[in-house]
Amino acid sequence: DASDIEKGTYPHYMLKEMDEQPTVIRKIIQAYEQGEDVTIDADILNAIAEADRLYIIAAGTSYHAGLIGKQYFEKIAKIPVEVHISSEFGYNMPLLSEKPLFIFISQSGETADSRQVLVKIKELGYKALTVTNVPGSTLSREADYTLLLHAGPEIAVASTKAYVAQVAVLAVAAYAVAKQKGITLDFDLKQELAIVANGIQAMVDSKDVMEQIAEDFLKIARNAFFIGRNMDFCVSLEGALKLKEISYIQAEGFAGGELKHGTIALIEEGTPVFALATQKDVALNIRGNVKEVVARGANACIIAMEGMEEEGDRLVIPRVHELLTPLVSVVPLQLISYYAALHRRCDVDKPRNLAKSVTVE
Ligand code: AGP
Image (cartoon, rainbow, N blue to C red):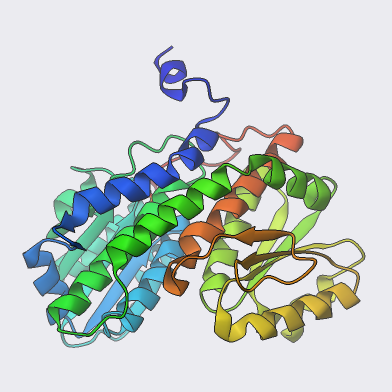
């Protein structure tokens, strides 16, 4: 049938979509390039630059992309940001700033939890920008502005290429706003994204390594932990969600420093702990956390960025700009989840109890 054609020779959409990630980054560069730079539409630029605070609203993987987006807007463009889970925002609305701009992140553009927030803030007279993969989707039509992900259709329930597209487009937006505001930047985003595309390529070309990691760490696991600090923490949340939804292994993403406040009690002989070490400032601290869990019997898989690796690390991801590491470090986590799910004969593309777009609140 038609879906077989689209999948080509791939056994699963998820695998195909993970493989497309380098191309997605290159498409985003093309879609947003203007001469030597990447930028966004002038009216969207102005809407963001004029806001005194951004409110990012999203669910699931898109929420995790929003957590990275917050760091981009704050660190690159110097605009304060709050990130909210859409289903919570409706009845637990924070005190808003004087000139807020709402940013909805949604692959499908149809998520009901996010839409109810959009309807509400429009009633209050506020402006909204939707970052989506689907032109003409509900969230796109009902918002004032849209930024497209250019990721191509995402069919697998587990979101992969849309996440990297969301993070990349948020980086482009933050970078463009920073330039507009006259902030001096010490990197060239267009160039750095091209390096990211190559880094992701190297990761998707190492599938045998990820399959072996899944086999060594997750074959008989009942649960798994993902730890990281700073941006690596945000990626840990996404790694845990990916593993849960397709392999049904109970997984949690944690800020490395938070383990000792309770969760470390769960570590037993052989508990898999995936630790990301891509953030220079906190590399020593995360390695300290790994020692703590290993001392309690954990089976630790350290994924470090090139230049920061140490003996015994299980995987080294290619070096990219420190702010862009989530785009590369998430890829091995996606692939490890995929192989863990395959080992358990799970329905990778259509996990139980889940829908691709969640149109109920
Ligand atoms: C991700 O793998 C999920 N299946 C899910 O969390 C998803 O990201 C969430 O439902 C939000 O969807 P959206 O991006 O289409 O709004």
